[in-house]
Image 1 (cartoon, helix red, strand yellow):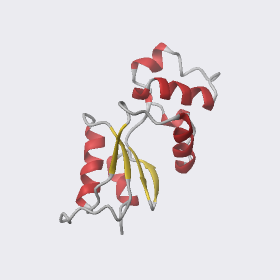
Image 2: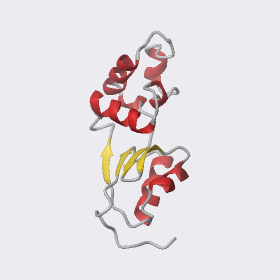
Image 3: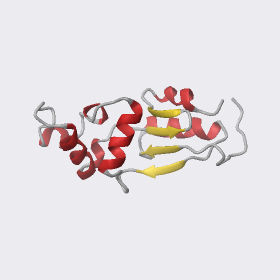
Length: 126
């Protein structure tokens, strides 16, 4: 795929962690498609509980599906316990954004958890 001149005519947003290789690969593919996305550095600017609810609904995922289970707060807060509701899990993610699985990409063609990173191709411009 050859690089195109970046455009903002195709609005995309990536919830990005710069030191994550998966997230960097997704961002690179988006840019190679000719799109310059809005980049949300979610560790610095965590999505609100409302936004997390919107993202999970758009992806057809539960709150639990958005969790990174290998991060320290997951164990420390015993989030594996099934007693936690989606609402409570969203609260944990807002309070500890490191728990958010990444990268999440929003585009006119859909919203995806881009793991593996190649999944982003499903929602790039045609």
